[in-house]
Length: 111
Image (tube, rainbow, N blue to C red; front, top):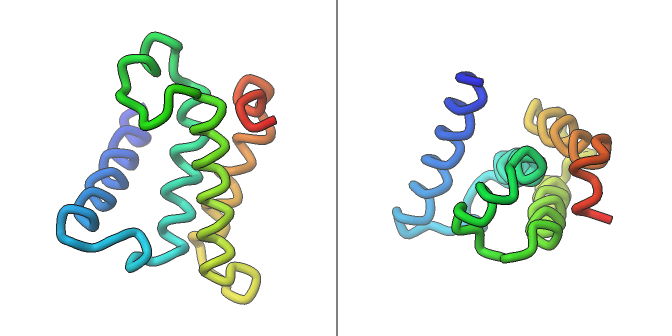
């Protein structure tokens, strides 16, 4: 659990640093963004309904938010031209996205 928290904390800090620093997601590395959104999508499947309700999520629908983040990961993989590059971020994003479609308790949110 500790490694997952440290990773997610670092991802969140980097994302907020980009936005607070006057940047936007469009100025970031698309492969990194693919991993970021790929990590967010399955995280919703591990949250209890109570935790989701208190999370301050931008959408009230867990299903819609999972679909949005899953789609964002695919979008940024495409923006990064993932089929033409050998990059560890491609492998990371695809592996994490596999957790969304491969787990019944999570995949119900993207059907």
